[in-house]
Length: 474
Image (cartoon, rainbow, N blue to C red):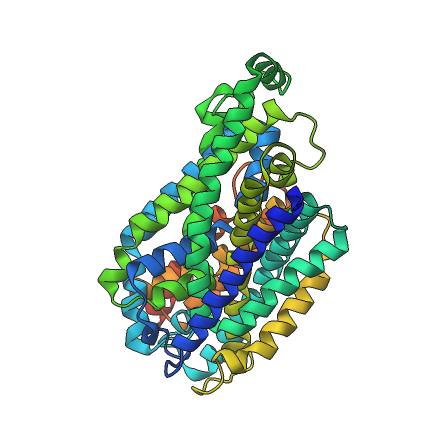
């Protein structure tokens, strides 16, 4: 007779096998397509929207969002809602322009857009600086995915901590190396579909369990604290304004400053097709993110006292659902974390190969050429994650915000074709990055995310440098 865990493992194994197959198909379909011109990939709106949405979800949604909802309640619904404000601004203005600009210069990476039109010497300096920032910040971000994967395997199957970490990260690195960029897009799209199914099942299951003992459920919710169900901190919208503005800015910075996202827009079939993916992306992101936060809140009433709320999704299903359902949820959690991790690894590999090492010929960034770099970066980030003692929330948000503050201002200037100079682009990068680091160091991030002051001061610095250079030149 097959045990519960054997049955759930079979379901998980089938989804994993399907993911590897999809990644392989992406590798096969990328034959004859040069990685050095992302426009050659000609992705349709569904591939752009779902792959970008799955990449955006990351392990944060199935660990961090659940943990925030469980620990702090309704106020953390403001995070996805604030993010939506930034996403609306971003999708109204930028994706089609990113695609248009990228096509005009045959962009291979986001950094190509950042240094567009600069003199060769200064472009060389900024390209290397941007690439280093990308590798460092995305290294932290992918390390957060390994931590999320560790919690997932440990919660779902009871593996030991280090064994869970290496098993999960090894799987992702393997299929990332197989598929390259197009394999990453295909795998992310497949995993997005798994994510939608898993999200619907998870919220339905926790509601059903909560309704079995409604009196006990509400007692547990009441013990969570008097403000647990309040949407606004301390019961006032005024306290929420800095948080809303900060995360809206972080969302804008995420869309413009994360290469694993920008490459999807660069690879869209046409500017119009890229733009039309906006509703696919936003519905997917908001549905999964809000639902997982609400899941965490309901879970507080069902299973109070969970030691690590970020592992709550897998712990709940391990204890309360039949094996087939558990297997689907295990596959869902894996898909969510894997989609972000493999996209980030590809973006890091492209940046290291094309921008930092300067291998810009058209034979250096296909799946075969990138796999040693991908394996190397995967191994390094695995080792880094062993020494991280922060939560997935802390590491992921910090990495996203720092990179957004440094790169989003230059991307805004380039994509909107504002007046610029080499010095203003370099200055915006330096001011945005240093402001975000200082803001974080002074612990102001608890009030407003560091992306907001970083982007604002960087744009002001850019304008000031352009003005002063124009004034003295005349």
